[in-house]
Image (cartoon, rainbow, N blue to C red; front, top):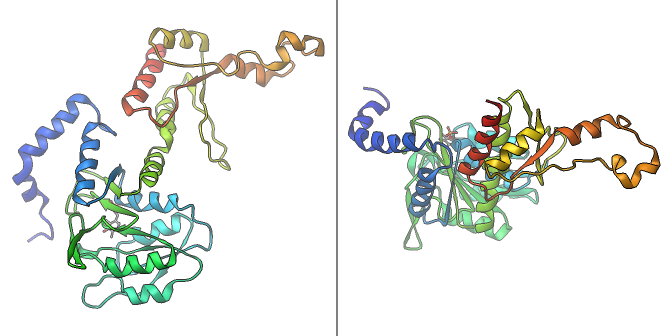
Length: 329
Ligand SMILES: *Cc1c(COP(=O)(O)O)cnc(C)c1O
């Protein structure tokens, strides 16, 4: 008698899952493709929430909303000690301090009066876990949060589709909190073949922010691809910086040839800046020569800026990457 029999589950859904998976394989749209958008819509609907934002794991589905809070050292997030490690691990990794409060002995879920006693001026959020498949007392928790002007992040990794009657109405996991995280780890109720997660929220601005955080603005996707091309150097981000990628600027071997190739492929690009100011005609009288400022001169020969903006789809990013690869092949 195994603890969980995923083989038996697979046998009951095999045909549906394999045919849906083969459609994804045929289109090769593994990441952020239409199948992801469809699942986001369906899970948001299930949760009575406005937006679903898919991500890499349940852990990321908790970490990203915590990051969106811009937590500072000393900020506190109240949670339960009786949960999977990621609940508190993400609070710590987002830069805050987990504040543990006790659980109810019957449901094993976080105890609202204990949450109330733990509120301090440094409390930024409450992170209840809907443990084992049943929801924590969200009515009480939301009341405490709204009285104190703080956010609730629901850890619903174990409770997708769970609901609770509050003031006579069924409310879903994911419906009331600011952001809710789900996990599609294989052993969870909705398990994937590998890791996966999703956030749901009804706050439009938060959904946009989470979409940026999950893709690092699309720049990480370019950088991962270009790291594999020896002829191209992706932008270096100083570890002390958070880059906002006004431009995504690579250094490229045979830059002018690559530029002509992108033009032929219909892909927008630009060279910022082809002539450094000290070599501009109007400054000739200042006496700088070719080679006076060698790094600026080399940069002007090697740099090429590629399309970068939040609305770029994964398919468009792939077109740009394929065109660059194609030139060097
Ligand atoms: C599984 C789980 C997570 C983490 O989800 P992953 O997809 O494994 O990253 C977080 N919180 C709880 C309560 C979980 O059970």
